[in-house]
Image (cartoon, rainbow, N blue to C red; front, top):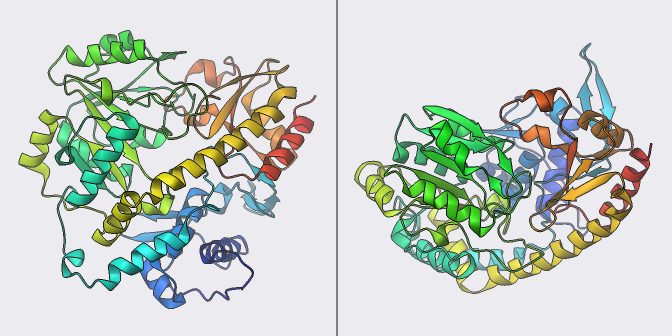
Length: 470
């Protein structure tokens, strides 16, 4: 590992973007090799004389695009180049003989990308500067295991106002990302659990639960979400769902199915529903829908949320709301785990929310994403003869299902030949099924729009029209 020399340009671009582009090009050119360790965010920030959050934003962008990998307790490492399929002049893909060939993607419809151009960097910098200038020793102390009480109180108020969540600050645990909270939940739930997932689902959560669950099962879904009767048949005692906007299908669970799910959970003492409130901030049609936890009167819902999409991936602040029974278990046995979020970051985030900047930023991003969403739907109209459209009511991606019998692989390959990256729904399958593997299920692709400009959406759709017209 060595420091990176970056010549910053005074061209109006953000420093984190320049760091991101420099490292990306170094990887593409082979200057940074596979498994080579990158400097820590702290050391690189000090070397470049920029804020640590600036470096973290750059690393998070590289991480989300697959250029680097994060290894817990070890740091960041260069990823395999054949895994790179992103926006830019070109990416490299390894042939069977070991040589590299260029594969160009001029537009990447990633369902996970967000638009960082509107992030209030100046406000975040001001709050950070003010907090550090106060010389408060307690800010540098270890802090509470659940997270700072002030931030947890602010999150509790925010969740109640925006999502209808009924919980006080004592029920909230703050952690550095959902991964940590799910690993902590492993201990709180206890071993030997049978945990159910929809299929397809969020693969990362499935893989984490697979490390500790006694048994994992997948159950079918329909147009209203997870089929509750299948939970009974499979003997599940916990289920992971995303009722506000299921990934990747985009289904929003209606109130009838939600009540059915809560009734199932209430029929046994140790049954729980794990609610990942994925993409709940961005809804484009109909009235806002409260969280599933808002309807829970029996203490059966474990609520998990994050600021990664509503603020920035590098914030790395997620939160979990435990029902009373599990909260008692946590406090008696597992509060030994220290909080994984720095107190400085917690204090900055707390002020960011309390002073109203977060709400203003979120409202702005809702407007930005709604405009992109409407533009994408307009551009999709010529496609609706050959495709059916779903998942368009919320979130940062939509789904197109082919009507002409083409396979997912055919659609992706045709798009790639025109320089466009699209994503197949089968990539989110956690258990391969014959009807998917055999190509019997209708081919469905995901089109994300969060990280694209209006011009990129238009050009990408024009290229897809050319790619899929035959």
